Image (cartoon, rainbow, N blue to C red; front, side, top):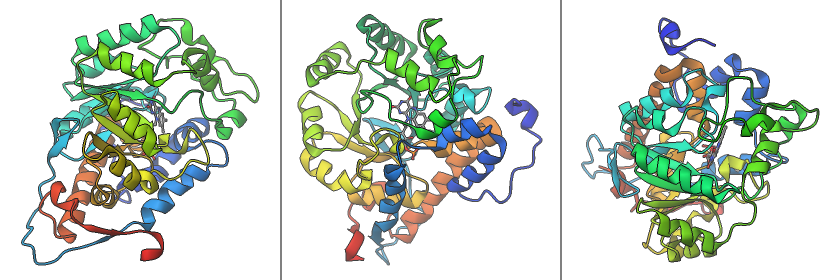
Length: 374
Ligand SMILES: Cc1cc2nc3c(=O)[nH]c(=O)nc-3n(C[C@H](O)[C@H](O)[C@H](O)COP(=O)(O)O)c2cc1C
């Protein structure tokens, strides 16, 4: 694969005119097993498909003659200013899709004024990601070794990360059949750069019918966490705490009761429990349970500015965008990611203008019709 410098002269693909178009372009350049790892879901991929279908069923009633002009996009996310009501979702091993990996994507996020969430399983160390100058939030996977958790938290704080996002929907890794069929493993040179060297050898071992990445995560992640562990984590850091991977409103209320500043309504992009509902289906109930005591973000299936508007109109503070950012990174490194983020901003600006909103806050007053109402 080539570096952003060497691809700088590559003509942009003129047929990529929206965020979702990066999928086809990425598929053309990625090895088939990496495409499957990035784009696939778990089980029969029912939840993966449901995320999209449910977003498509959300109709937003536009307002007219409100003098909205050119809408502003800036907002507050996790209590901090952001240029858009969106952040780049935490995603593992970004050097799988481009040699500059996390550094390139975080640099693009900095340029767009969008927070970048650095995964525990990053293939560049969090210190290097933070050095890009982006507003970096650290995503924590809870490891079996609590000393490592404490160490990661200290490193993230020391590096200047501005928020902590703990992911709670991975007691075990979802059964991702494409990865099993491909006997997916990390190529040499792509490692979990935040974790002690040598421990991720498992992730590089090819065994027929086995996902080496799943085997590695299974060995590393703590499988039996409870709300008291989360309360402990809350007491360990002064950073804003976001709890990612909540679908049941009762869990959202529990997260707030232990001091979460935000919950992220997420089914991991359909990669964990196949059979879970689409996130947008659960958003209204989660918002009711949280009742304004914390921010509520949404991810899983967000592919356009219209999807961002849908989430805002339902009451979310903002969204995380996952796969489209990896597809764009695969296609053209940092430049591809910059292009994707600027498309998202343009799409959101258009969607707000067409719905008669001057800014993201006004979008929260729009009426929404779902499913059979339409
Ligand atoms: C390749 C890949 C790797 C991911 N790695 C992580 C991770 O390390 N930590 C995490 O909390 N979520 C991870 N996720 C889930 C994303 O943060 C996010 O919830 C999901 O991608 C959102 O759905 P979308 O891709 O449809 O936008 C990953 C997703 C993908 C596609």
